[in-house]
Length: 417
Figure (cartoon, rainbow, N blue to C red):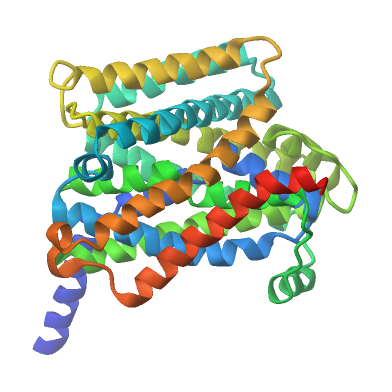
């Protein structure tokens, strides 16, 4: 009897510790399914049916490995990835990397506001109302709120993304065809399909995630004794990322692809689902897009401001007041204003911005991964916590494959493929 009570106490204690640590992995993974991601997954499903679902499996494995490395580096060093890159690569290389990442961050945030505008238009709300209102609310949450309040709201948003499971099931997918597409993957080699694969990888494993994950682990004050709980948080976050991506692709592949319906944005997917899967499926899809867009419109400029300030030695963090981290908050505010402003321009080229921001992510990712792999294998930085052989094999394999895909994207147009 005493033994049972002791076991129960241990279980509750472990659960309590996990709930306290819960956040960085799940939030980082969930934000990955942003408006740009939803658009890319929707386009993949509408254009290729179930044909590219298999890409989620290797993406999941690499995502878990990369996020674990980020968390471990943050816990061991107490420094953000941008800090470590600057200290070890020098200011010139850091400047070049972060100019590209800053432009990518603005493009990604613009995509989030496009998602806010598009999803609300499904419900009859003009972008000239939805975008400014959401922009102000997001700014207030970050600038006037605290990390704990923001984190709780972000976790609620993460759960809301599971609405895509409902939307996909209402499309009555052919599960046997999905299984066949995963077990026997096929890949058509062309510029268009290559750009789509890079876009899928770029949105599933985005460069900004590595910086945000490491910064949030530090902000939460996690230590190596919390490592197992942190790893669980990361795995759960990666599972959510891939499950949501899977069901978005399934929703569009089972309805739009067989009916040869072309879409240009996630909003088009929501509208196209209405006559095929019913009004509720359309509204659920649009609601998921709205939640994901607000969520990511908060996190993406936040992550960009974090890593740019870290890279150049400025104070950064939600636990600091405006006067303590002026550059951080000014940069965050500027990214929001520029991104929301682009969406307010009539006939702005939102689709090219959305898709190519994901492709830029896919091209930038190898640069960030190479930096990470070199840093985490330095005993001077990591001590006994350097990478094990299996982690290095997966990490370097991901780098080689991504560089190969990026090179193919540049070469194939010259071959007229």
